[in-house]
Amino acid sequence: MSELKAINAYRLTLNTEDSDVYIHNDEFGCGGDLVECYLKSEADKVIAELEKKLDLYKRGWEETDKINASLYAQLRHQKYRRCLKMAKLCHWKMGVFIYKKEKSDFYYRWRKRWLETAEQFKETR
Image (tube, rainbow, N blue to C red; front, side):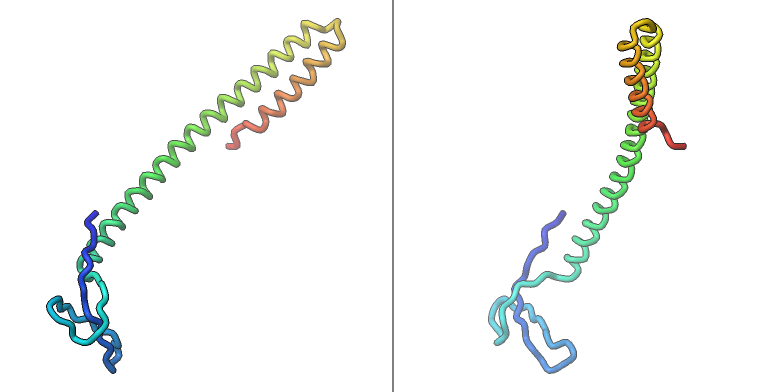
C-alpha cells in the first residue's frame, strides 16, 4: 500500500458556497491558516487498493467458512458414530451381566445416556 503524502496548504475562507479554498504554496504564506492535506487523486488510489484487499479478504473468509462447516459436519458425524458404538457396547454388556441386577441396571442407564448424547450429534437433513 502506498502511503499518502501530506502537503502544506493555506486555507482561505471566502464568501462563496465553498467557504474553504486551499492554495498550495510552499514558498510564502497568503494570510490563511496553514493545514496539511492530501491530493484527491492519491487518496482515491489508496482507497481503491484497500477496497481490493477487502474484497480478497471477504472471499477468503467465505471459503474458509465453507471448509470449517465441512470439518464441523465431519466431526459431528464421528461423534454421533462413537456414541452409537458406546451404546451398542453397553447393550452387549447388559446381556453379559443379565444375572447381576446392579451391573445390568448400570449399563442400561449408560446405554440410555449414550443414545441421548447421540441424538444431540445426529445430522438434521
